[in-house]
Length: 250
Image 1: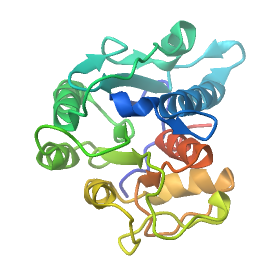
Image 2: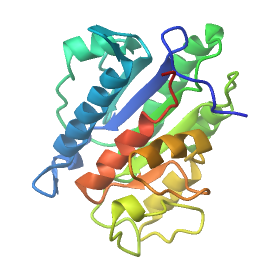
Image 3: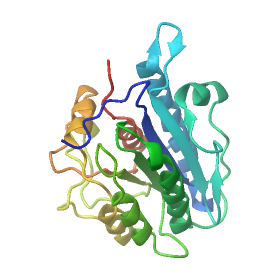
Image 4: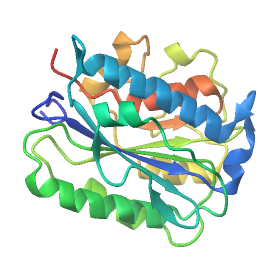
């Protein structure tokens, strides 16, 4: 079965974060800016990765992270792929929103990174690409390059692509309880065209990921996709939790 490989020190999970830092990320989401909500959720998720990786006083390298920020250009914020213990020591780089939303350029950077990483990838969990944006892309259409990424191969299955769309209203129907919400499926009705585009490039949520999230109190449907509407901070937190829901060796 695909997406069943366990993250361990010898076969760590690779998670590539791709964050939109266009000027609109300075807009408010609740009591903070959009970018601050995303970074706080990232800090919580990183803390959870460290907890899962800690044995005694040592942080085992069960996760390897890359972080791209993009607006009109793409910035490699960690200078390649780094183990979770190094990311924990150095902390999260500061991000300053400005400019447009060159999504296609960002995914091309991801594609190049994966082409290098997958040469000797072994039996680790399939890589996951977590993409966060708050609006329509500028420049070239990213769909073709995302489809190329999703067509790559590992022993655990093709790379997964998750999308978090931050906007005041993504869904036609409001979410009353995040923990009881079944997630976005192919039947979900959106309030924006941009959301439909992101759904088309989002992977199905693997059963193994859904099981990990169920232990955290979420009730996502069997046909849920790896896409979240970032309408409020609790949904951003769920999106980040989903990015780190790789099953891991205990």
